[in-house]
Length: 194
Image 1 (cartoon, rainbow, N blue to C red):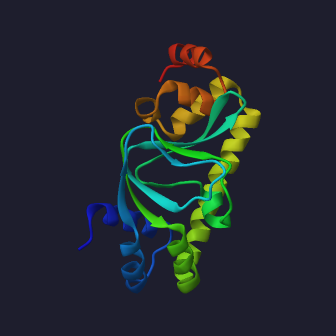
Image 2: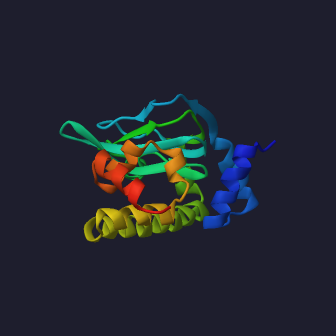
């Protein structure tokens, strides 16, 4: 019997690239439920990512350490995929950390099983390629924002893309995400009409 989390995963997969029922029947049961507490490190820099996650509840972030501070690269929340994707796909040690910001629930698949499925079912490989194309498009947009926009423009772009983010993520992480300190972030919060 399919769980609500598996139905959510299936809907997300179908939105990217529909699969045959045969493939869903082989693929979906490989995704197992997993829960994590708030502020739990799921993946560590220097280690190879062991799972691809599908978030069904909670908020997480991928971050890097730079000197004495951490820099948030991306946030994940339901319904989205998470983990250190380059490590998943390249099967190399990660340069990043994957951490829960709130108590979180996931479905996750071991990377070894994912790669078996990719080799066995070309449909899943097509799904992965299309999903990565969407991800790359989003990353290119984000890089352009970081390189070209003022702090206020980056703040407005973040709110346009994810208007609910202010309620989900502590502001210190949002400040780091758009590349400003927390004091300037507070000033933007007071100045920009949301």
